[in-house]
Amino acid sequence: MDKLLALKMFVETVRCGGYSSAARKLGLSTSSVTRQVAGLESELGASLLNRTTRNTSVTLAGQAYFDKAVAILEAIDEADASVADRGSEAQGHLRASVPVEFGRRIIAPHLGRLLERHPGLEISLSLSDRVSDLISERIDVSVRLGSSVVSDDIVSKKIGDFQRWVVASPDYLARTGLPREPSDLLQHQCLRFDYGGVHQDWTFQGDENPQRLGVQGRLQSNNADTLREAALAGGGVALLADWLVRDDVGQGRLTRVLEQYEVNPGTASTCINALYLPNHRGSSRINVFIEFLEEILAA
Image (cartoon, rainbow, N blue to C red; front, side, top):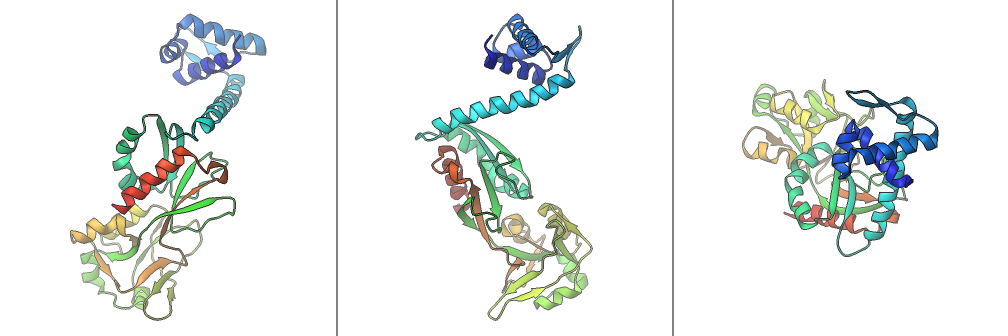
């Protein structure tokens, strides 16, 4: 029995929910898939699948075996890709993690162009505002906005810059008045990003020394677009990335205030960084993805 082939057939049978569907996906006969999975069960001395006339489901032992089999097959694919990934043409599976709204608004509209350029490239794009663990989550490249590198074992490449704008709706400002100095915000409802329980001051850098304000408000969220929507609805003053609110400001839905200051949460920077592990240096997949990001950010 070809053990690797049997593993692939078993995994596809579980994923597809039956032998026939797995056989169609693999381009094989149903009898071949059934025979290989049965041979695997015989060798293991355990039932991996429950079979009825209507459906096929995985047993408890089969589920545990499935998880291990998937990891083995992915490791083999990754080993193959690591060899091919040093060539001139990017190919293989790239796992990327990007902030939610940055991914939706800045990256997603251009992904078709990237895939068209590189027919051998397959991308899994994870959208998350939390910090990704490149090793445990098996992420090839992660995009971070305004965050410093968390480890000396991670390569950080700057791919762009952005600004953070203090914005509020015209209705809100008509009710509360226009803040003219950073300290005026202490009298306002500030819509704050939730950094996992860590309170972040807003730092205002003008011509003089930085001013750090412990702003307050009744709404926090770990999603930037939620804060944007709240600001549009007149809920308060928000500190948001320029790429997220530029259209709203341009069309008068939001008003930018305190424009004479550079504003950031705490000591955060305004850099956009691509992070990856040192052993991925020279990866064609990562290189073309980073070049793609640099291209769209420059535009």
